Length: 263
Length: 246
View 1 (cartoon, chains in turn purple, brown):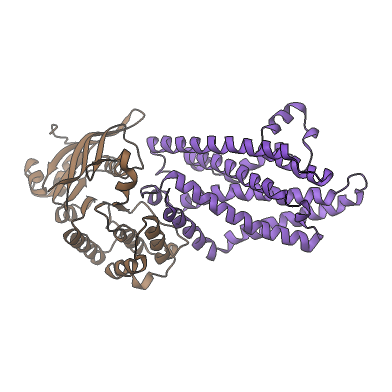
View 2 (view 1 turned 180 degrees about the vertical axis):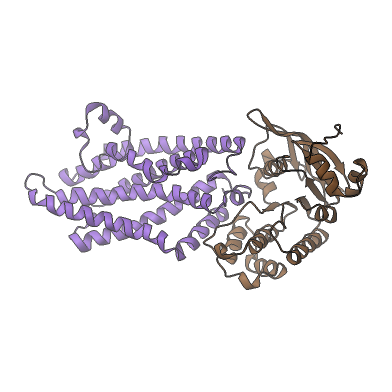
């Protein structure tokens, strides 16, 4: 893996974001709107806080963390789509660039996006609702990292599918991640799900992150088991999906799809 | 002269369709090889295989004496291409796009190389322009600049002058010839302009339905088909006058 090829891709996207207002809106506008809407719902429901303590922390914390996962996924998939839309894939893959370097660059980009989006949402939550996400403590950090990795997993999966099946499935870039939301137990505990769905949620690393977050809020203890589950599952999924992406890449080269993605 | 590109029995099948059917040829050091053929003859598929973006069904590609699949990274660092069918990021300026390419190939002295190539291709007036605002001729020049920037040993040019006005097209051809002279670069050249093909190519490989049906200098090919004009040869073949195999 060569650093100069990874930084080349990072530079290309930094140039893009520097002068593209709609793309900056993606980082600022949507997370802000999300937070404002859910913030007011939370304030309304907080009137019943006697029946559910720490309601604001549950909801706004969950919302901010979900956005971390969503933006991490988008960081990978949208970066790939930018290359498709500008018919630039051939310039990249007919160069010495390796698929692993491409993925590494998109993962770094997604971290940049997550940091930018988190700044917006954390500041807005503090400003509008006096909610400080860091009340969750330092234990939040490993869970945050796990959410980023889960976002990468979904991003690599989505990108592989778009590369293989083309324009028809481009909509997955925005839609697929929401398939995971119900079983990520973002806004409710896992035990509200029917038993069969709990089994599926159990193998979703994001569900362990959100369960962990709730455990921190309600008991104040560090949920080591949830963190171990989330990390283990993420390690397995990310390794498997990177291998799968390389296989998809080979299939696309074999079928001549790489030069036709987006047509 | 030594062969820098060796292609042996190269075949590409898409399901039951044989896009390229057992072709063999070589490109020698400093040579310009013209790849000629009607639409669907397999020219672009061949170039895509040589660039590693399509995997051959069978056959072998060697460049600089190395098998392509095992030395992809080293080989592609010394190869580049320009095609009218490939674009570049639209929201970046000409200069930014070239800078990204420079980084991608790990070039040194990127800024001075960009200055040099921009001057050579007369791109000064639009070097800070957004790529989406370029005319098709300017876009072609950017694509060529991208290819020349890395000073490749082998260059694949897929209809490089297709959308250029006669003046810029002539300058581009002169530049390609001059770069070949100064650097010993080898070129695989496709074009539908027969006069250009004759002017540029040392040898021509004529593809038809995925097969090589003629190979040699333009003069030898014209003689073989009993024509005085390469365009007449092209029309004869494209309209169904397929000759016996070589």
